[in-house]
Length: 317
Image 1: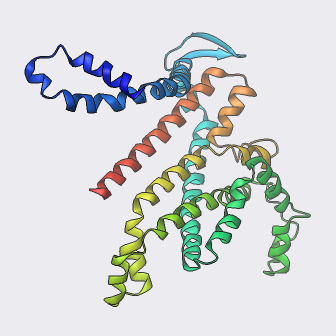
Image 2 (image 1 turned 180 degrees about the vertical axis):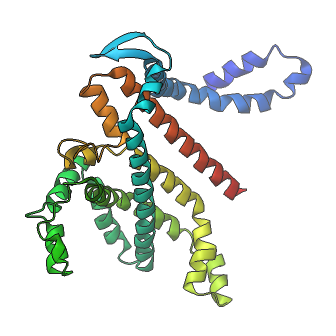
């Protein structure tokens, strides 16, 4: 296969001028990787590119009851931004994402440092830490909903009997929006931390070297080494984990669907963008507005990803 591709490239450049023939080898080296990547790029465009383009196209059409209606231009986007439930969900999702990402990164870094400080037990502890991430999100949502139950929940029992906070005796976490969002945030963070913690632990293991040893010889303490040497060395990994965590937080759906009754309740106080999009598409059967919401969320996440990539490139430079 390799020889066939090389022969094809040589024939393509055989008609070039003598001056260009001198760069034939360089041209072949540039074209050969693309020749191998082309089949994969075709698959990616078909599997990812077409659905994205199709969704964007549908967002410019009126659609009800799973039918593609007439072209309406930007009307769907005007309608969703004029919808007070959508603007509230947009703000709620952003606050939720900031809380989840900040808590996830901080807890994951702390766990990674603990694992790094215990190298002998790190293998066993890594497996134990990773177990929550392996649990399906729907299952973890059901478990956490039971744990926050006002009558039989473990959380209220701990707060009352261990911490002595009597006001949580029979406290209903899902009666109003703020405590319900707190409960869901805890469940989402619990599910997100393991993957990020193990990834950061792997990055920290690569920071043990001559630079750290030289800093210790010069009298630097553990905090100074962590702050000025080890954390800057894993900064690109931190940027990647922050990007992934942000995307996961904005796309959170399962926990909101399972832990609230009705979904997004009470009184729309836990509706986030992903859940509102699902309700608009499959409960209200308004495909035009739903696809517009999906496109806005896609553009937001794309902008966040580009921002993080640029920050990472500036750090590398």
